[in-house]
Image (cartoon, rainbow, N blue to C red; front, side, top):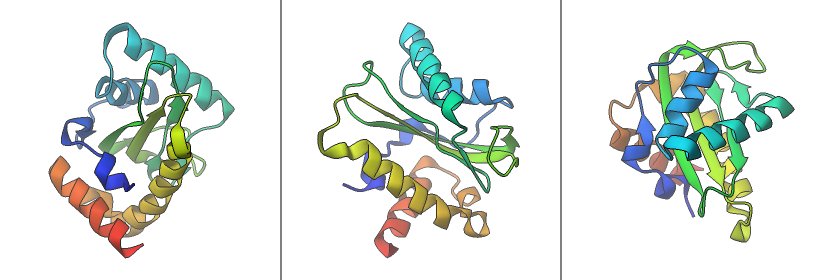
Length: 151
């Protein structure tokens, strides 16, 4: 299973509007769920963030959690040109985010495997700020696919 095969154009927002962490998380969750389900997912993400920020540094955040509201692994991707204070470990703004939500029962531990793949891809995306290159969701998916082929 590849990361690029899990990405869907309708779950990618390359122009996040929000300037605050909570609002960015709402925007990303809204690409996956709406209404009361979205609020419950936001609460679950906040609980996870209390364990430690998922702002991994160098402009990247990978918020993630498990939830009964999801029956298969879901990923949303967002980009903020201005950056968001995400309490990242390097204290710098986050510009590129992968939201990963998985069900509690996860055959083959896809959740952990995909988290690892996202981390590896992000290492490549932050080189020369390549995450700023794509202008459409499809271009981002193709960029990630080409990076995966090289890893």
